[in-house]
Length: 164
Image 1 (tube, rainbow, N blue to C red):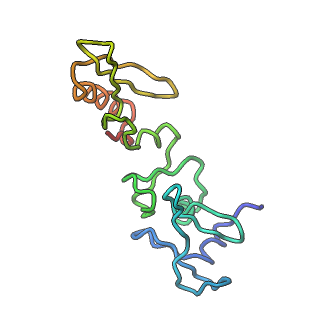
Image 2: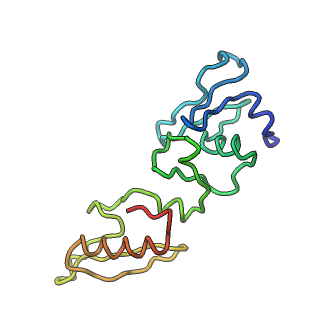
Image 3: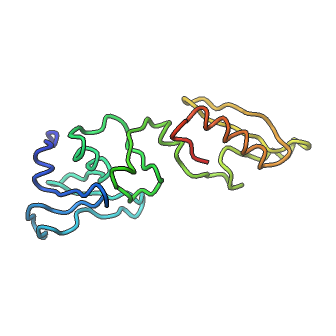
């Protein structure tokens, strides 16, 4: 399928950068002008919009709509809300930067922290991944100390993409 032209996108859709909402600017089958465009995907939480039989991520279309360029990298949601497509909430990011701006998946509730029961005095390890390499930041007596070490290094390495 040929690449969508910017002029075509702005002809068929309206986008409000302050709300992040798309609406149809032209009538389509089963759609009236002004109807909201897109649906939230249950599995991912992202908003998708179907145009001429092809599905597009609304956050990527928002970037394209405002800048006139299809993003060359991933689009990160600053506030981590996948359905919030306000332009101020979107930024281009590498895969690593996008992953740095995620919630903790640790069963201990603190990002970058794991428990090593065989380490009696300091069983809490802080680890960070940067540029596809995992690095241990040391072992600590409490999970809070380990998380502090993780946060300090994550701020240094990930900058504006840091998220505890």
